[in-house]
Image 1 (cartoon, rainbow, N blue to C red):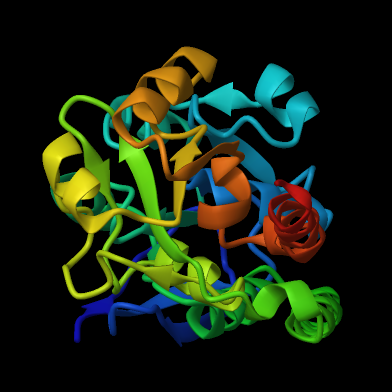
Image 2: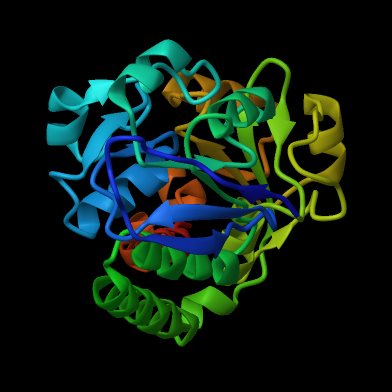
Length: 281
């Protein structure tokens, strides 16, 4: 656990102490007015919490909401942050993520600014993150309402009869090399919420696999994600030739991997997906 002390010479702000999801303690001004987000799903969350005026910088991958993507200052990629540009913007809060952002860049930014780092590998941690971001940004009531609504919608999904079909699933995030998802990921948690069994759940993070290994595992369902690798119909056709007995679908990776306010829409997407699979011959 670490502590972060910082000063803004020209300002006299009331500070509050927080601990992020990595156990790092830091001081953040009440009602931060200059926020930079380094995490696409958390950028969308900030928009849902109605922080348009406060958010001054986002990454080039923060595509939601579209208006912010077009109008907000972009400060590089999630792992290629333009640190001099961030310094020139003088944020009073930076939101980062343990997995999505480079550890070295987060450490460098912490020398000058308060950086709150999320660490999300399941729905419970995502809901905790949403509540904490609400507290950080003086939006606790809005965040609480959002968490309650997300919780209710996932509870409704669990009642769906189609969510009890325990299909054996492989979810691909990259084509060359072939990469899938392990059991300690947010995507795995979403797969299990759908009532499915991830065939790579006993591996960590994002293991490299192969067409031969997947063929030997013979999954009931192969999901080709839209991100980070943008699987297309041509990839589906190629995989179908290799796995003629497996049902293969292109899926929207945002609903499986974005752990901010996108979770509000995820249960309805999963319900449609489950219904589609159930209705296929």
